[in-house]
Image (cartoon, rainbow, N blue to C red; front, side, top):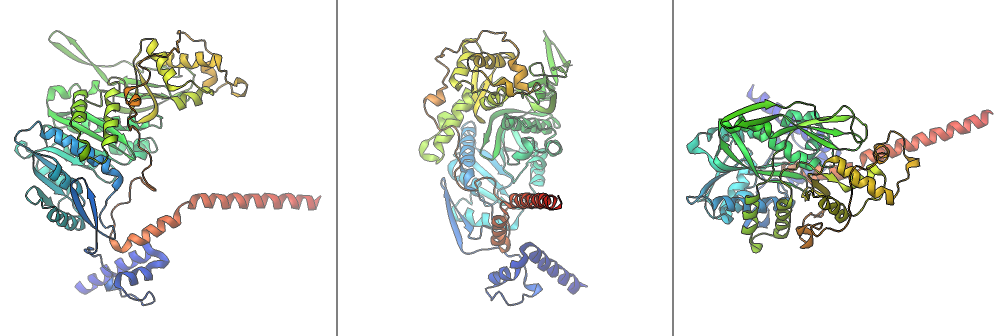
Length: 555
């Protein structure tokens, strides 16, 4: 029986390899065993091995880590900005604790992030670097020893959720918990909100941006408990969906969050929140969440709070809001609304925390210093009480005109007494407390001197319906002294350019036996759908031409 099971297990591995590698399976086997590709492999020779040599050395910050040259363990250099910012955040936290801090990196992989914390965060007393993968643990231990931080970092091979549950009692909690998973962190949040000390920090990364930005609202609901929506402001919506999800998990245990920093960068979002315990504060949560109504025509967004708090002396009442806050048809263009959420509608940054963090940055310590300084400056400039924003490109597309410059649009808002800022999540964003009516009046007034070609617009087009209405407000485009934001005047690095080819989320870490084959397969499959479409289009044209020729012959 034992022999039969062993044979079956080996045969399954052999079949899996053949299925994955296709025609290349013999060459892959020969490469791994150092034999000729024509030699027929034996089933019991196929096994998964931890690659130990040779090593590729990567230096980041003060850490030097060794990776198997076959890239067995996940590493993405583009996320150095993420790690630099995390080091700065934990330095800020450690400065608040005289006795030092304990840190948990629940999904540590190679241990790079933990090693940087150990070597670059003064006051890091103990760091638990955990990963469930044996291969990752072997790599992690090697790197911990190589960097001589054994006295600070403790490696752990456990299920991340179980490890966090084991440390949820108050005297075992961590001052900082870092979650940087592949994809969504939703399965880890329940344990994470319980094992953070009162006032401690929870740092969470999400790389499943397609889900958070509206491509799969049903999947977003199953993971985050909210419906996402396609929008020009989708990256800020993604941040607010993640925050409401963390708050929801925390509330179940009488805890709540206060966002310190909420970042959308590259291919991910990253939030840093403080976690506190208070049943009374948990009751306030529904006033911090809102449903989102978005017009399908002009994309005007309206928020509907879930509830409100009425304070009268010592009396505090928690009431539901009346709604909906929008008519069935959009009052600006007459189109219908889509509904999404709930999303976090309270502030997503803490101004004092951002100021202290920016002032603590040391240029020599971070490769991405310029970008960190620029992003933090933009976050400071963002209007804290204004969720979401407009985008110049969208306003232009809806109205069908060449709209004014950004500084002119901002001047029109400032001259009318409204506040305005950009959002760090979008280059052409306009975040303002002006009502939508005023926004569209700016467009209408500009169109009077720069007419749109209305003859080409259908009667039901959103832009035509908006432009057909007369402006209700006086618009002044005279240049305002504050129209150009400080971050732009200082020419700070605010938005990242594409740093390298294929710079987005990397594939999951794989065993070395499959790495080269999967890379070849990825390259081979690039553009496959487009090629199929071109072939089908060509075939259709040939059939159509043949049909025409046959008809001519018959006639």
